[in-house]
Length: 84
Ligand SMILES: [Zn+2]
Image 1 (tube, rainbow, N blue to C red):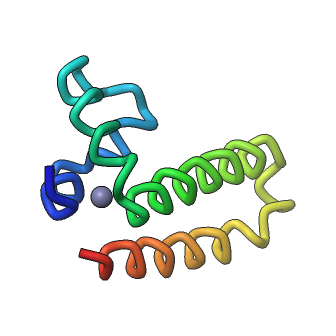
Image 2 (image 1 turned 30 degrees about the vertical axis):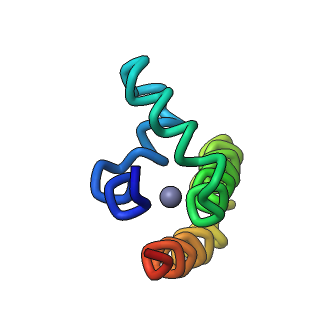
């Protein structure tokens, strides 16, 4: 599998969300082992999801940094998409 295909099919997201079929998961893991961009993509997404879960446990007025977190995510996402 090429990186572009993993990207187009949203495999990093779906992998983390447990939404891949067994065959897709096997194909993605095979690709992942030789793709630094996907390693980075999965790691960044896992960090984002963990940070978001922490943020959502706080009451809304204690989340001034949530916007910054989302901006950080967009920048990472852009960088990641640049690595085709
Ligand atoms: Zn990849």
